[in-house]
Length: 64
Image 1 (tube, rainbow, N blue to C red):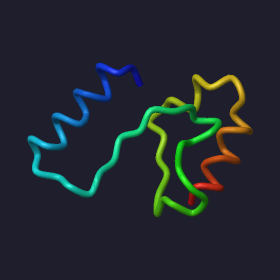
Image 2 (image 1 turned 30 degrees about the vertical axis):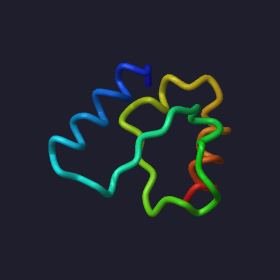
Image 3 (image 1 turned 90 degrees about the horizontal axis):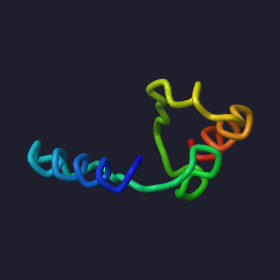
Image 4 (image 1 turned 180 degrees about the vertical axis):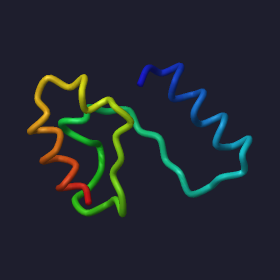
């Protein structure tokens, strides 16, 4: 995500009244979260754009 995309996402979440979402800048191969931090990890097609899909999948598994 670009900084503009992150800001738009944060603005939209605030406008929707959500307080249980968190947007962070990072790489799919090295997610900026602790081990087992997430209940669910989803990818809306971006995994297909990553050059090292194996590393991204390993890090998604680490995060969950």
